[in-house]
Length: 68
Image 1 (cartoon, one colour):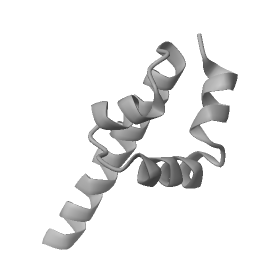
Image 2 (spheres, helix red, strand yellow):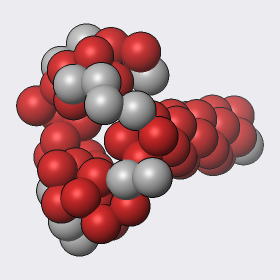
Image 3 (tube, one colour):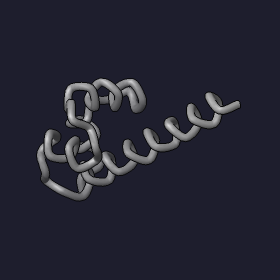
Image 4 (cartoon, helix red, strand yellow):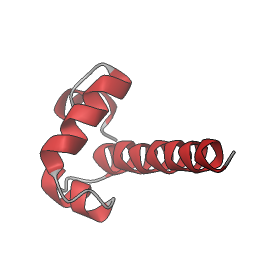
């Protein structure tokens, strides 16, 4: 039971942080490295991989399509 709850919480936290990344990509001109650090990712390469797996596009492409 404890593993299930912890796993779900980790998944929720990851989803929330990826949503924060998307928002920063769309609303700022900050570098991907700066956005990674602001959202708690110390390894921006890991975030790039995670983002591409989740959203099927690169962070750069997502920014181009959604930048306000």
